[in-house]
Image (spheres, one colour):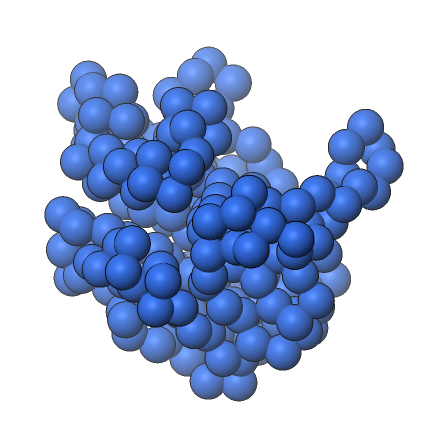
Length: 230
């Protein structure tokens, strides 16, 4: 893998059943949302409704497992929801899912259809490798509030993704920072699918394969490498 990804022993101890599948892609084509990517999001919302069969997203066993982990590292899961649960809640409203850009639409569709947190980072804006760690509390997380760039710090013990510069995503997969997000200028990306028991690893791999298919369709000629769950 061109970009190294590591999970700290502290995180392994907190969530021993955690797995992640990484898809590294170069030569991507991004741009504004299209009718095709919008249709994928609508279809994902329909698939989600079938999957839930009348339940709320947090009642799904996989989402319940993420809520337990959030509580374990000191976050309130009903206030700071994992990315998949937050998207699923939006998908079930009249407003539906947001349209961000082509690449983000693709991975959001997979996240909602499979109820699995999926993130995308621009490799060209990552400094060094990415590490999933428990924060000391003094790390920088650069975000935007009120149209202005601000620096926040994670809570001590919070699970975060970080690189050599600072935190790239707070509370495991709750909020991504703007520095490494996928923009319309992105040509190289890393996509992370994250799961906990009871989700079978086979389902994570199925979701990954579906995302690879979409990347190949919308970015013909892209060079894609899949790294199996850890």
